[in-house]
Length: 143
Image (cartoon, rainbow, N blue to C red; front, side, top):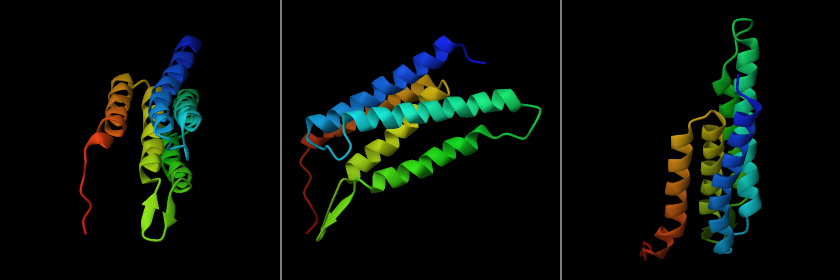
């Protein structure tokens, strides 16, 4: 069982890491899902993972419980949230990167929630770098 301090730490760390990604989206006016949305997705994912682990601790040996099933539900549910950020106008599509960042932030939250800190930190750093630094690389579109 986790202590209350560990639970609170994991939630705040998920908020911080999700917030970093959301901050980048806000900074570049990608407000379909910005700072607050990314924080909420990450914290919500961490909370769901914590609840899943807690349920496993409570019912372990008493009933068949699979903590991965709840995490899988998060991944599916975030797909619907991300779909709401995607806008198609004619032949152009906007919001795919924001949808992908939401999906990634949910994974970060799940990682932090289960205590897989190194993966959460590494994913947040990679996602932030991809969003912030790779936007400056000119890429020619196929014609």
